[in-house]
Length: 492
Image 1: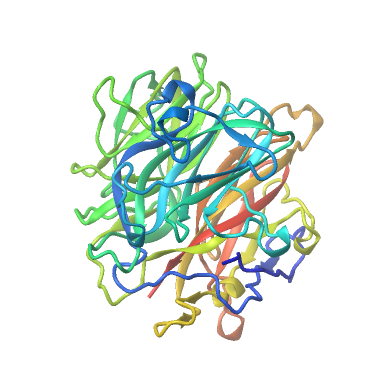
Image 2: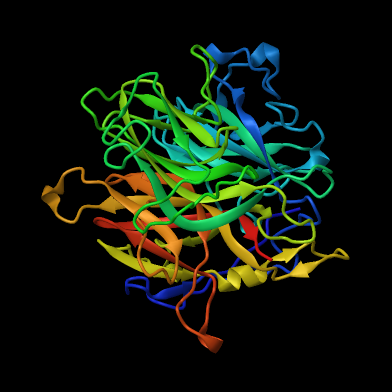
């Protein structure tokens, strides 16, 4: 099966603040989703975070298919068709061994030690990379030579139960892959109910630089520190959202954007680990995000909640500040006959828009400016279970999960130095722009981060009403940005 072919059309000028641009749907009649949604399909099952793949020589204990024990620790070759690496995650880290149970895997993918600049894509094995003609490319992350770059991924499996990593570099070379698993999405054939995703208006619950938290205000995480962060019943700020995550035992996991601010005098290369419970000293750790000295790096994370209603944030080295924004939460006990909160991955990732392209205005998002995107046509193009007796066209949707890229931030003034910026995606129609961010970046960088996109409104009624509007805001300078869609979140 090949990736659907997509077309797009422009309905507004991107350079005009708050102009509405519509993301069109596919021309293919096969639909964009092939998963069933009968209970418990599309439900999330959290796992204790576990590392299931690491191709670095010093971590050669991992039995990596298709390398096998003798070749574990070999770098992945990039260049030509050898840039493809097929990986079987089933039976690892608590994942089911039966491919018929798994709709998608929730994991953090890290590229490390790349020999050249490039990008990495991941998709279900068996789908044609780039789609027919090769023009529908998507990427999970981009990287520069020698860098370590992570990103969250929600990826379906091919008919053989595997996924494919596909790299492209400026020159033929090698890189290593690290995969940490945090949970999985079930198919309708799995007979144990999971949790559903409830989207919220984005809200900030932690900023160790300025907001009161369990450690006090303005207290950074030192090397080896664990910060226990209450989640159930937590309030968000600016604007205030009381109990942004409900204080109920049925809430099993939280979806957060975590920004690592590594700008203290003793900053060094470090990583952050988010777990449901504190890990004992010396325990093997996974990584949700990485950051270099002087940097600010954000990553989306799905974190299972511990029995005390909290999660734990661990800083490996140096002195680190952490900012946490809540975007959604997972809860059990939803009625089987309803669809709200089910996560359904697309057949393969789809590039929704790229502001560098003429069909999207080829215009940067300017300093302190916002613009709106309408996903009404995209949402209307979705067909669940195409060709089946339970086929459903245009199912109600809360939002989508997609990979957001900031591309080549330009300074406002030449004397501004290395001034960073951030991008926000938030529901259209909010009375106040929230104090949150999806992605942080510096001039000239290409920075990815997975984002949960909650639909809002265009503020109009009747025939002019649009309930699939997302606002994008850029804080500083001017920047291009890209969104690749990986999954949709259903509504009733």
